[in-house]
Length: 478
Image 1: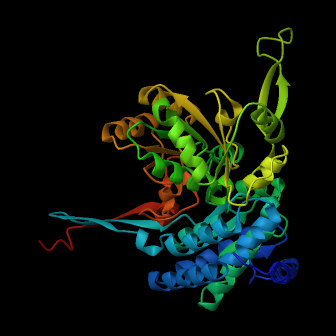
Image 2: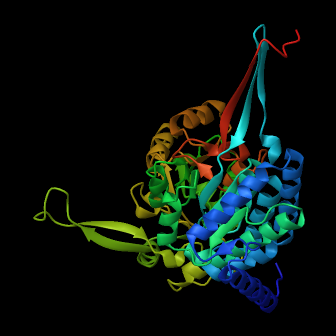
């Protein structure tokens, strides 16, 4: 995508200067404030005003937000890559556009009714009030756009706590969406945040008495924090999605789809294929086709050299006491999260063409590349004897996150067995992983996939509380 870097940088600087200026003066229109108390108070006032609007008017605000987000998709994508140093601009543009167009609005709020001899009962979905939303550095504008549409459709206002490493992108998205709301005749400050997001600000937001609900999209620590808050919480946590390829699969299509899904936004999405488990009978063919569709195969010492680059290593004492020999544990080197495959492999002295999207390598099942969620375009391939062994291993390395799993197979029985065994929120069959959020597949889009708390792919209804209205001995006309 041809985007003028100087122009984007100038626009970004101008937008953020306005955001900072308005925030420093406590101005309501930008939604950016100096303190959590100011941000929550403004959102609380705005939510009361939103409640007075009709559903039709609320949908009008959402339409304005969709248009603003879609029009700003490229700018926000470029900002995110420049600020965080992660991902691919073209893929982030698509994600922003998808969030703008494919996130459900007020149509997601469906009323249920029971009518009988004793009258009429309605079940409707009411807002929680003010939602505290924690957003990640991996999807800094996409999550904001998707959450804003769904949460306002449900009648709430939102106080955001963006990840500090992508704060400018998130704050710019918040400001742009607030401007769209105001221009459409809605109240100011339906979306707020503090100008300097931090852990302290996030903690203050979580315990604030006027925050009625918490929604966290991020790693295990932040999800655990909101689940321990004592408030209604939605937690969208980590994943380590396995993809299985059995002997019945269309091998070339499987290779193409796996490369596409694994490389999407440089593997930042938690839904992306993180390890491939392949029945041995078709493994050689699959790897050959992976190389055709953008994979670069490394082996032997090159794998060991790559380990030293993208993993961190530390020693931990065994639990039974200090006298035992320390054991080695591994983590992910965050400097390479979301980086291009070409950049990563250059660190071990290998130059590859620009069309290389994924580094592939064969490993054992217990290799750190398999067990850790790398979030970079490095795909370990593990050979297994049969589909039974593949399913057993895939369930193990998914770590019980119940997030996403993928399978390429023409056997309905095998697909069914894996789906039942892995119990993930998203299960994609014979397609790239991103089909699970509506890219090339049916269904709505979200970037808050709540496995830990069970809501699944969140939408407007996820951010409501059920309300029951009962009228006895009336309005039953049968």
